[in-house]
Image 1 (cartoon, rainbow, N blue to C red):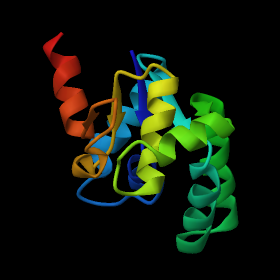
Image 2 (image 1 turned 90 degrees about the vertical axis):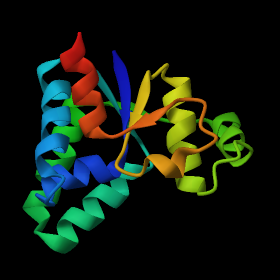
Image 3 (image 1 turned 60 degrees about the horizontal axis):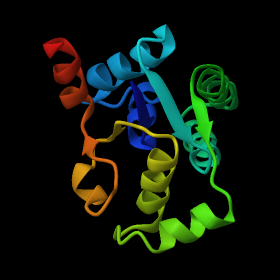
Length: 138
């Protein structure tokens, strides 16, 4: 299964944000182990680096980047993809970009804590906890 992982889930892990850390860390662990294929949108890399560095340190930001680049497929959009995101009908443009990356990478789900932000997405959004529950049902 391929899933697109929203930046809030990855930040939960690297910033140890409670009460979300455990479920988000389990999802990232599934990506690291190869149990699921994770896609991380390319536009989120600079934000990830900036926020981890701001709230921790440069070495922590470097580690976060290395881990994401090592274990996730990086989802890029071309000009047509950016135009598609603009016309998607998702209220926030950044979320529309995530949704477009998810669609273009044939992701089954967008994993996020902000499910409501993805109304209008061609790919359903679910929380880390919901993904874990679905996988345990198999």
